[in-house]
Image (cartoon, rainbow over all chains, first blue to last red; front, side, top):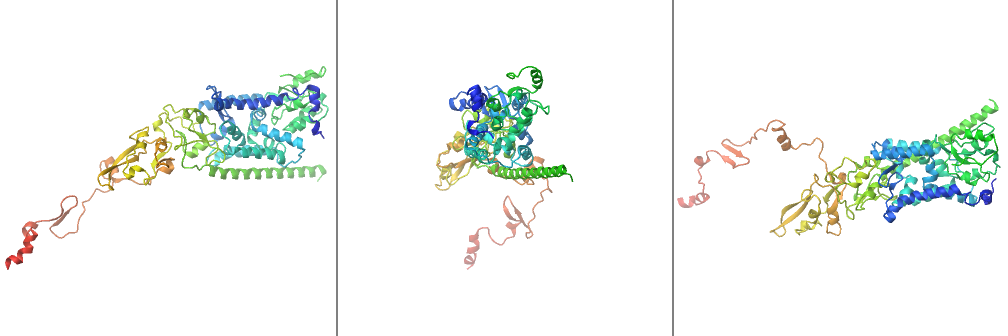
Length: 302
Length: 285
């Protein structure tokens, strides 16, 4: 069992604090930076990005539209404007390349809430688990796509979607949306580890499918160096994705984390004192074969 | 059954059981969402959608709650529904009494909409129908008391056509006029400038969503005289002359002289001057 009180100490000792929190810091900068781009307008009158994550316009030229929200609208019978279609194509291309769930770990504001809950769970030693299956999110996704077809009143999921609610709440007005966010926090803290993002959220499930063949992946190219400290499993929001890549060498499995459940958050890279993990291409296996010829080295840098 | 088969059987049962549980749970969520969406699609009467908004049901399917219309409104009148509001979360509305639509000619809110929830076919703001002004309280409106106001009439951006003044007799004083504001739905856009301008503590003229403000004739209903004008003739059996069941020699002219007794002048034994009859006995004696 991993000792929670010393979690990450090895990495800090080996790499220093900054290097062992590098991607965590970058992710927070990304998440907060995106919010900041939307907020300079209403706060300081400096309009960089207008709208919210559902649809936005950057510097009055670049339209970006959330494909999941637009899909719901189209299922309820909408023919979108050209700008929205362009916006969706850009967003889809981006996530198809870098991994759909990059949305979850680098963009989505709810991630900061659920990460906090996960951190607090570790600190407080809360070990409750629930029976919720990780496939629930696909059921939820199906449900949210069926509802616009059968229920009058259109995009039903967007009435309660905590992801759009939180972002809109911060950029426009929060209202009682904080109750929803607090609910997710408590659910993740007390009921189920990674309960919302890892099990229920249909937004993540949608982006999961979008990025199922993405090019940017985390890999365990240096898996021979693994000292079985297990800390990557502890900090990973989708720990089931690590094992095939990290421990699959004997079964001939690729060292690349191929599961699209992986959010490309890079916490495993940060926490590993042995630098087993790194970002790389989907086909990094070839490089891996090449490297095994020589000494274990520092891995592929992006 | 071998040991591994038993294990498989158990796994299958477990798998099916778990799936059933998940499906039931998600199904319940679906029912809840469906019920909630019905409740959330009702909106307070004073919440007005921006210009060009599709009919409410279509609008709720088309609006992706991005808030771009809110951002592009130069008068900042639009709000997005918050959680807990009685309007679908994240959808735009304005309240006429505090911030009416100023009817920009270039309609920036519509241009900003990425999904046509605000219909891009709308090019002329005077064609928009956000709602309809209704002189809802004729007991409070001071025009009905015979006082001069006409503020709603004068602030109306389609002055004279959306609201006209109907001059009526003031029966209280017997010698003055009432200038009664009358809204015409063929011109009123529902912008709400009249509601904001109404001088009363609580406006007597208010904007309501079309479906609340308007009555509707039965689909089968035809106004005979209009149909007759349009067709050039009566569409039913031609008008037959009404026949009165009157004694012989008596006619009735409905729109003219009334009762006509033919040959009356010659045959009556009585004089046309009633005094002659009254005085006749007296004169004989």
